[in-house]
Image 1 (cartoon, rainbow, N blue to C red):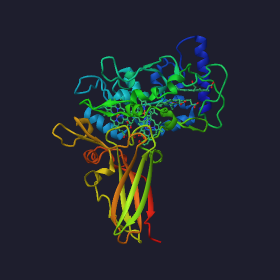
Image 2 (tube, rainbow, N blue to C red; image 1 turned 30 degrees about the vertical axis):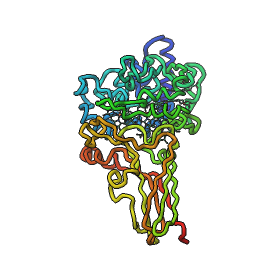
Image 3 (cartoon, protein in one colour; image 1 turned 45 degrees about the horizontal axis):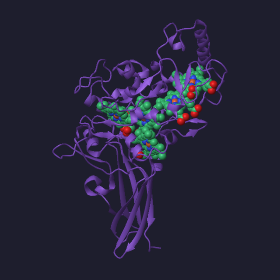
Image 4 (tube, rainbow, N blue to C red; image 1 turned 135 degrees about the vertical axis):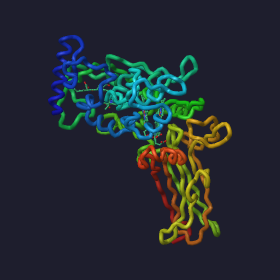
Amino acid sequence: MIRKRVQILVALTCGMLVMGGVAQVSSAWAGKERPPLQQIPSAVCGECHQEIFHEWQGSVHARSSAIHDPLHAAMYRMMIGDPTQEGVKNPKTGTYPECLQCHTPNAARDGKTKLDALPAYEEGVNCVGCHTVEAFHGVKGEDGKLRLGSAAYTYSDKKVQGPYGAHHGQTPALAPGAAENAQPTINPYPHAQNGTLFQSSGICLGCHEQHNNPHGLPLCATGPELVAAGQVTTCQSCHMPTVKGHANHTMAGGHDPAMLKRGVTLDLTTRLEGEQIAATITLRNNLIHNFPTGAPFRWVALRVTALDAQGQVSWKSAQENPIKEDPQAMLMLKLTDAQGQPVPPAMATTLVADTRLKPREERKLEYKIPAKEVKTVRAELQYGLLLPPMMKAMADKVPAAAMQPVVFVQTERTVAGEP
Ligand code: HEC
Ligand code: HEC
Ligand code: HEC
Ligand code: HEC
Ligand code: HEC
């Protein structure tokens, strides 16, 4: 079936060359005009790039739209409106909803807001959402305003952009990320070689550099964090490692415990000091951006527990909420309104504190634990997608599983002096 589809694609491409103009590239469009590049759904690219397609499908990019991401959908509906309607405007500014410039770049290019109108809109950051970007112009406009997502890029209407500029219409080749039993095929889309962009952080930064909240606070600022770190490498070097011979498109981050675990080193030492155990926890951020980075409602909490010989918990660094009980253990942004009341990021006017680990930062935290009957001390790090008060506020709008905090790394020491 797939092979047949590919043959059709190739046949039509040749036809397209002969006719020298617009023609169909897929049987799905038989008899119709070929859609513009930004309306091509990922499944079409996935016919030949099967592994890359599956990696992308499992990525957060594939569910970045308000149709597929429950968290984004809930916030979009609260702040903007209905993602299935055309002509929606930001109610505060009366302009096109800026969220769509990053979360659904193809719809933004077409100026549309009905996201379920086309698979290429609903898919959010899909193949052509990135592979038609021709140049990145920085997020700071001449007028001093931020250019967000698609507004920071210029796009190609004619050529798929990629790192190498694949041969087109000449030698049959195996697509990068093709299935093992695939046949060599001819790539039906004209390509442009654009490694300057695709092998630099620029391809990511239009959407990931900076985003201010409605009061102008720069709360998503992975870009400036990198500048502070001296920009020692590209985003791709960590987020797109080479796996099975091609650049991996899973682009894991905060939703992936395995990725989180590699971002930070958790070290624990204990010593007996009379009636007390002194536990020292060293956290080291291995990254060139903050830990955690990105959205201002992410948080990481250190939890320390002491266990007796039976494995029963005899002491905890926080019973319930470390924000109140053990503030040093919370890596997060502390935000308030003008009256000094804690508020969600969108309503904040003041950044009171940023306790996230800075790039390459090493931080030591000390705990004194009553030593009686303690056999083991355990330290663990928990990651949350949404701050606890926001989780409560969203409880009726977002399934609990979509915002459940996870413990992503844990370490234990037997107390020194014990056998
Ligand atoms: C009919 C099969 C086929 C389809 C459909 C297809 N490709 Fe390809 N693609 C290939 C082949 C084959 C190569 C490798 C060609 C070579 O090395 O000569 C390739 C290479 C690439 C490359 C890497 C080389 C470069 O230019 O940097 C990118 C990126 C790419 N394709 C993106 C896409 C996108 C995006 C789509 C969907 C709009 C797509 N492809 C659809 C077959 C296909
Ligand atoms: C067109 C805008 C856009 C571009 C370009 C883009 N991203 Fe994203 N990215 C997003 C959006 C939007 C999300 C959040 C989606 C959501 O959760 O709703 C995201 C999420 C992520 C995440 C978080 C994953 C997680 O588990 O939470 C990582 C990591 C990421 N992108 C890396 C990259 C890298 C690396 C590049 C460049 C190769 C890149 N992105 C290019 C828009 C973009
Ligand atoms: C978030 C942006 C983004 C999205 C979405 C995306 N790509 Fe890519 N892709 C890149 C970047 C950046 C590179 C270059 C990586 C490098 O060489 O460092 C790349 C490389 C590639 C390559 C060359 C791989 C190799 O190592 O030879 C192919 C083929 C490709 N992409 C196809 C696709 C297809 C098909 C999809 C959709 C299923 C897709 N891409 C979605 C950003 C993206
Ligand atoms: C040295 C490796 C490394 C580099 C370089 C790197 N990252 Fe990350 N990134 C990680 C790890 C590990 C995580 C998971 C820990 C975290 O969330 O901070 C992560 C997390 C993220 C997240 C997830 C945030 C969330 O809310 O879930 C985003 C977005 C992200 N990175 C974007 C980028 C961008 C954009 C670049 C380039 C400008 C980049 N990263 C460069 C390793 C790296
Ligand atoms: C400048 C680009 C940009 C704009 C504009 C933008 N976002 Fe995002 N958004 C991102 C990126 C990138 C991520 C994921 C990575 C991170 O944590 O930074 C994200 C993540 C999110 C998440 C977390 C999703 C999850 O699954 O964890 C929500 C919710 C969200 N955005 C809502 C919105 C809303 C609502 C708007 C408009 C009012 C908006 N965003 C505007 C880039 C943007």
